[in-house]
Image (cartoon, rainbow, N blue to C red; front, top):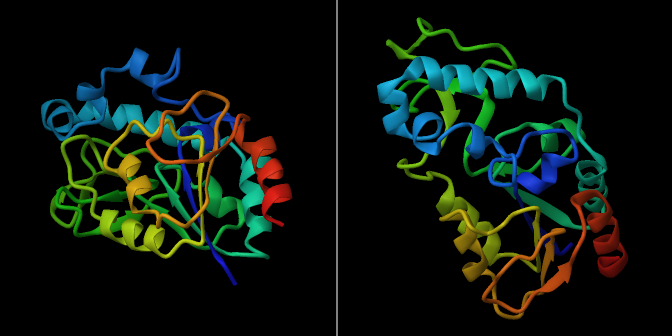
Length: 222
């Protein structure tokens, strides 16, 4: 069975109602990155950071996987499917995908300050006085200024790909965007996005949103 490796970004979950970060009207226009998505921001104002991610978690609880998430599950019947996601939501898992690597952490988990202890908290809020392993509890998120610990695992998966697909990612955020450089030269690459995406490799563009774009992809692959 051929290995299909899929990298998903914010556009994958946008159709489920998850607020994007970089689009017009996105979260970064409402909240400065350095305040809510950096380790320095956490050290300065953990109450603000917790409030931000508590709101994201509450929103996620009311969202459902979209057709795109479900269509990826269907592809797993024909391919050894591995999903690498830049998203911190759990919609891939709730749709039924089994092999999901979260590069940037998981919204439904919390950790201690060194990330050595991780706890599944579901959709509940983190309180300012919550403690985990004798440390203030924090969102299990990879913030700007922090290492991406699963990057080597993601690279290894990409190097094994027979087909590589990018869905809903601007390919502007590194190091995740650099995964494209590890796709073997003979491997076909597909990019599904309604917006123009600039890449340095030869790719097959499907200019569409995730849900209908994956249906178009299936007609090519199957």
